[in-house]
Length: 211
Image (cartoon, rainbow, N blue to C red; front, side, top):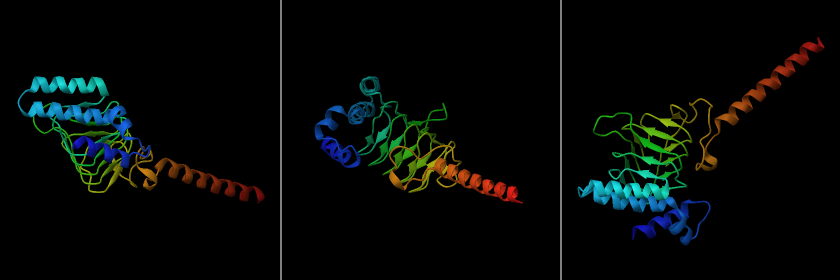
């Protein structure tokens, strides 16, 4: 049963270690996925108005907007979820994690493929905007508040606006919620470098004062 599989997956991935009851009754991301299954089923059968209605009800109840045409794999974990928007032609693989405020949106008003493909195991940090018919490959990570406009290679972490691979992006933000200790904070690195420069300048001034 998909619900049991989804709940089990969330309990393993959520550091809060919620109970089964908490996940089933108090996790809007679970409810949003279930509403989407209904809406998508209606959409595929050609009952688009009813699909839209089901999607709208899900949005009202969860604060998560998933177009009924979007295709979603198994065990999608939308954590917190408020403000998440997933567009019509988005395709999401298995075991993907999405945090609040994320948009999988489009850049074109023309019909056709307009939204991202998100492969298995991708993590998208809070507030990130992933826009256009691009691909986040298996295991990729998107830092909080990043703006992704190009494909991301497998296993690569990107940050910034526009997003760049970790280590090359300007130090404007951190990777953000959901990345654990493996993620480097460019702001802290910049501050450390500035402190080292300041200490060096102080030593130079002291040396000149002694002369």
